[in-house]
Length: 260
Image (cartoon, rainbow, N blue to C red; front, side, top):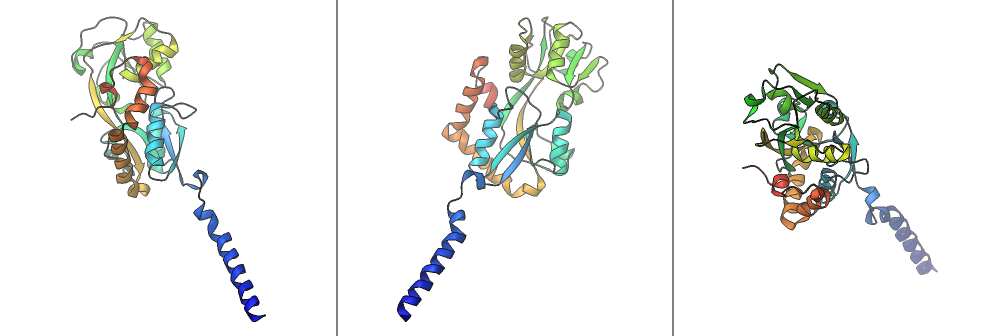
């Protein structure tokens, strides 16, 4: 009888232990920690379905280190501010040096992509660097720091809230050139049905673009960087780029190749 009683107690203990620990052992995707990624893009790079090029790259990189991500939209001028203040965890795509403006941001050192900043126009203006466009009527989207900084002392610059207004102004002849990134610029032209606008060569600037994390997540900086490197090494990165931008018929090296 004593032996039977002892065995019963052991069985009860095993059952209790299994009830306590089984959820941990059977952890599902829903149990993973979630970080909020702020984006100001609306089409090619980020979509409401979170299937844009950068959406997929970022989600894959964080998934590889055991973290889920939720992509949320913020206007360009507010996106970095929200991450800096801790209202969001990750800024999806900015140039190097943003930490000088936002002290709570930490840059992930592996680039997401290369962004070519170009002038879109309806006419063939001859350009060669920022000074060559100084006397033109220029449009830019608010919050694009590299464009704002390099045109700060130009006499005829119009700042608009979104890319839709930017390309609409160009189409209507209210500006001579629209400054934007080449890749997403062509996506906007397709979405807006504008066929008589093209970009001018050479690019005004080409920059590596990076993720930024709020400093409270600084321990994730190197793991995320390594995940991005691994994605480029195993072909996942190139596959995502091709699937999300192939319809634009642009050379892949202009999208994903880092600047030396």
